[in-house]
Structure formats: structure tokens, C-alpha cells
Length: 364
Image 1: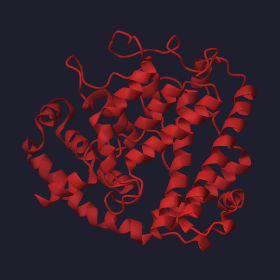
Image 2: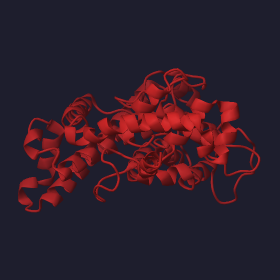
Image 3: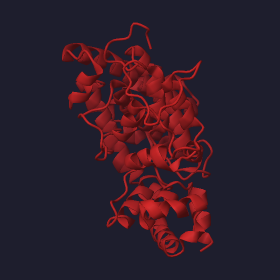
């Protein structure tokens, strides 16, 4: 972040701070500390064992929630730097944005939401906030990671085309520009990398992508016909799409911010529209890629087969833990007294890796 950063970029002087007062660090900003607290959290480590699209362990080359989060952070920092925003805050939001995802990806989220229908439902952004405000407990005097307001706001209002933010208790209509960067970076990362993994797995064939304009643009950009190694073509194409979208996002967002006349962070919060955006042309191309991936990858039988098998198992685990809460660690047993049994059981299951969840189910 530039020292002479614009008035709408977050810095420590403009931050609303932490819930619990803590002494400032000599060498790290509050936003760098938030990033580090997320990285060192148990929930972050467990992302390695959580499904992105494919169940972890099927192929070590496929993304999981952890590698996805790291890739989002790298893209987010690039965009934030290009827009002279707070890179460390952006990175913290990017690294933490998927902490609330349960095992088995979006299938697991739908199952938990159904199981919690009479108890407030389940939504992974809201769960992320529960993790950083309650479930992580590395400090003796309070639960949670005690992140700064702006980090928590960015996590609470994370959104995408298929991922709407849950209702929250934060004032205003929007998050900071750094939070908006995290949203854009997530969208770029999962579309490009899911495309690459789908091609690697053979679930998607190159011939199917002839009408996907952004894919054709990237192929032309790298001169794909000159490469003989299909793995090189696959990887360079995905990277080229990232480069196209990141460059477009920076250039389009600069113009949108200038034309918006926003001058302060509060101006950003009060506006419902986003200013970190893509050009209309590339937004259309990206939406077409998203539609393609939805119907040809995420809904492919190869990908959905495991989800169909896991519902009954997760339902059985939920019921068993509700009947025998002593099967949960002592922390969750104590938490159930204030949070309610069903919500606490949901918290416990949502925090599991795919492998640990299956192991518990097998032991029933």
C-alpha cells in the first residue's frame, strides 16, 4: 500500500480496531497480524483436507480449500497493489474467506443447511465469522481471533455469483474496497483453477470449450498450437485467463473508482454498488465460463457422485452427536450450553476435514 494512499484505502488510522483492546505490535501492522492469526489458526490448517471440487486424496495435483485460498490471496494482493489499497488487509480477507466451508464442499453446505433448517440454517460466510469470533480460542481472556473490524466485515460480506453474503450485524451496505478485491480475486481463482483441474481430470474436454470466448482468447494469447505438451497448454491457458482478468479488473476498477467520486472509506460503505469490477465485455465472457463450469463440471456425475453418497452418512453423524454430545471434544460440550446443542454439533461437523468426517461416520 502506498504511503500516500487514497482516502478510501484502509490504514490503521482509519480502522475501527479490535473488539478487545490489544497492544500494537512493534514490527507488524494490525492487518499483518490478522493475516498471521488466520494462517496460524486450526481452521486454516484444516482447509488442506477439505474439498474444493474433488475430494482431497484422489489426486495430489487437484486444488483443495487451502491451496485455493493461497491462490486467491496472491491474486488479491496483485489487484490491491494495482489499486493502491491495503495489501495486507486484502490478503487477510482472501486467506480467511473459506474458513467456514464444511467438509465435502458445497454439497456438505447444503446438507448442513437442511439439517439446521429449524435452528437458523447454515451458510459458510456466517460460519467463517463464527470461527474467527468464537470457535477459535488461542487466547486466555476471550474466544475468537480478535480480528480488526475491517477484516471481519470483509469475511462477513464475501460474495460471488453463486455465493451471496448472509445477513450480518454490520452497519452500511458494503464492505471496503479491499473486501471487494477479495471477492473479485476469489472469482478469478476458482474459475481459472477449476477449469484447469477439470481439464486435468478429463471431466472437461478441450472440444467443449470452443464457444467459450475467454478460453479462446487465452489460447490465442499463449500461441497454444505451438505447444506439444498438453499439460503446458492447460497450465499456460489458465494463467493467461488470470492475467487477462486481473489486468482488466485493475484498469476497470481504477476508472470506476475515479468516476464514483468516493473520497473516504465511509463513502464506500454507504454505496450498494461495487467499484472493484470487470469491464462489461470481460464480465460477459466470465459469466459464460461460469455457466459452462456449472453445467459441465460441478454438475457432472463424476463430481456429484460422492455428494449423493454422503448425505445419509452426514445425517446419521449429526443425529448421533445430538444424542451423544459427549463424543465431541470438551470445548464443544461446554459451548453447547450457551450456543445450543444443534448449533454446536453443526459447528463441530463443519470444522471437520473430509477424511476425519468419514472416519467418525465409519466409527458409528
